[in-house]
Length: 210
Image 1 (tube, helix red, strand yellow):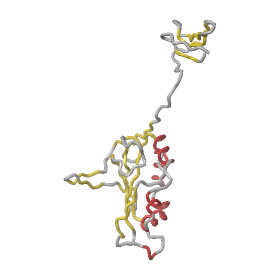
Image 2 (cartoon, rainbow, N blue to C red; image 1 turned 45 degrees about the vertical axis):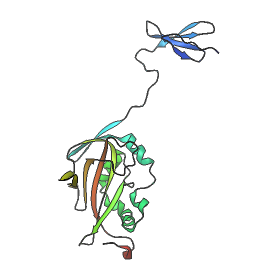
Image 3 (cartoon, one colour; image 1 turned 45 degrees about the horizontal axis):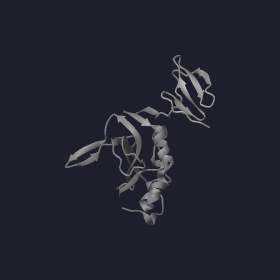
């Protein structure tokens, strides 16, 4: 079987293809030099590459611009979240309370974004409060951008704190740009979703921390 290499032509197995003046495709067999005309392909791509599917999600005071497909694909590859991978008593307690920790509107938001709420990037136990509840913080990531309040508050000398927005008396949330401990291979254009929460101690009482 022969192959051609004529300028302006696309090489095919056993021949070559080219566009003529009327935008019809001509197939040239290099064995018999016969030209066969194919249907008009003007304005039609011969091959296509999948495009990023960018979504805009309105949530409270924010507008989230999200690459949901890439975000979901990334979380689908993760086998477990920070509490399970750590396994300390504080993390075990968080995991035991997870279903009650996240408000339903957050679970829905995370689903819309492509985040698996059972796969936190990190969980931190701060303290046991005077009312007996345990104070935790943590974060997730998604690929994209956001418009609205950035929860980062600089404190000088490269320090910062967070100004999170309460959604209930036990759960607050905020958005900022960072990639700490992210599951994403590409750390560009990542939004870090910060949260804090208060929850009860529900695993063995003798394991409870201060």
